[in-house]
Image 1 (tube, one colour):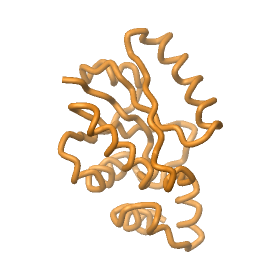
Image 2: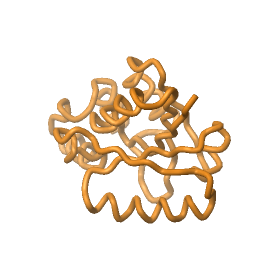
Image 3: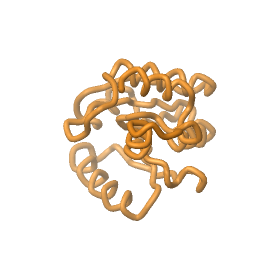
Length: 157
């Protein structure tokens, strides 16, 4: 059974994230969506809420598990019996940041590989940061995120 871990803050989960999970679910036997914390990002909601919203959004995909984690990603990946990390790439700027992460993760855990998928081009411009900003300014985010995300953003704004 091939397992991949798709980590992120999912702050919030967008249609682009969902697209990547759907793609991964057709390639891997098990996809673990790992909702994490970040000291550099301010989150729209607590970890437990982001995990629950992400579960609700991805409930239609049978081979997907959603769990929260705090700590080193490589430690989490190993704890799940996995050796693959999935990351999404939207732009060249994403690649530069992701390339740094790959190098660090390889140094920490050489047996863990990172693979990349690109979302459908209709989602390539969507970012959680922009979604939060549009929502905070009262804009319509319904074409970028699923209804549970809209509800959660309204609740925590």
